[in-house]
Length: 98
Image 1 (cartoon, one colour):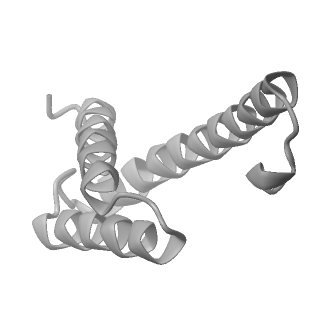
Image 2: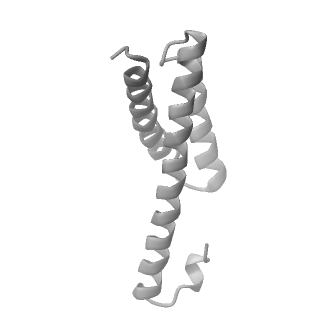
């Protein structure tokens, strides 16, 4: 990742945004594969897709990470709430509990 202050023009800035978006997409794909594995493990344990304490922990972690990394914790919370709900729906589908 390049320091934004080092980017001299919009072409360079846009290239860095695009590179960052590719990295984010790869990380999200990895997270989706982790969720698929979580559904397999939950099925084997008889666990539900939604485990409220874990949901709360993930959201709190997202806020704390955002604060530590210098971006808006409220936005992080919104993004992660959507991500967690998508993950739960995916797990429910995999578990046959839609």
